[in-house]
Image (tube, rainbow, N blue to C red; front, side):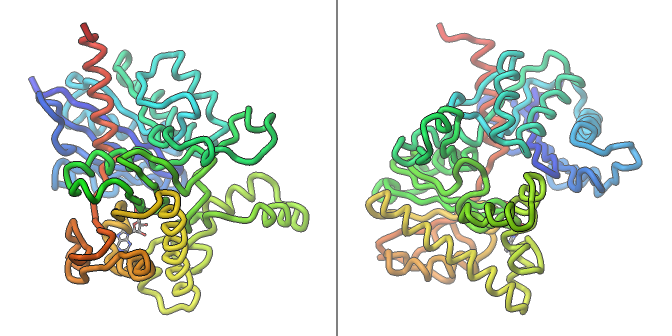
Length: 401
Ligand code: AMP
């Protein structure tokens, strides 16, 4: 009999990532199986690995009749079950983008919870439906399997009203128009690592830079979120791969009035055609932007760094100073060049980089003696979701005495 397995699904706007963890007593180890379907809906392509070994390498799913998230999930789960069977499944954990003002912690998904999550679709119309499709797909292939939702918004529930309130009339605020913040699963992982990795004197006032395809900053005081750059939606704040970040709403009014743009074309523009891609005209991928000699690509990289530096300054004043800066996610973990440029821009604040440590992507990349320490800590969103699911299922099976 194989060890129980916790399945993790992370359904994004054009991709589905999944992982499976063995829960053989004690803490969960690293994911044993990982995979993803990219290119949904036009060219869904599956990869799947067991440890370091590729089991499925770029299988085109069009021929299997897959044209949407539900189909991609169904085929992914079938392939996974082909590896470890269906019986060992203990639980499925899902990344859910929006928990609204009500979900401050992971939740077991029953019919009532599912309905509450559906009611939040208007707050995250491009992401929440895919997250819920993942739950439906699991319910179809593994009826009765406990499912748990982990939210990207929950970690930011500690942000005070002065920071999360938008200065709109009361009737609009009462409809849920407030700043929520995102990337909270990643930030909760980093917060869990601070006591293990940072000396006590350096972990009181911390800014974490989650720099991936989506990018945001979180100001943490004693490991709790007090401010973040994303807001009502995942569009606000920093420049990102395809999103432009903070934008004067007057630009939208102008486009609506002068070009007659409607919701769909603006949504497409703001989520998919701006940011590094729109500005550089080269790519949404920072590697390609940095490698390009095009003036617009140089400007895109420069503005990516500039906006981070500007916002870290703002967050440092919210925190009343800064003890440490932590880089994480694709760009934060792997681009020594971007980290170096950000740290140079923050030299005034007391950030001083150890260039060699940075080039090696060591955990600690600041020079000794600087006022602000700097770190690289790889994030583990799937691990957080898997642990949330395993914990809630264990609590359900063994209710507290
Ligand atoms: P994530 O969303 O966290 O998976 O991050 C994905 C992004 O990280 C990609 O779109 C790239 O722009 C970026 N990235 C990955 N590796 C590197 C690298 N070595 N240098 C610069 N950017 C990178």
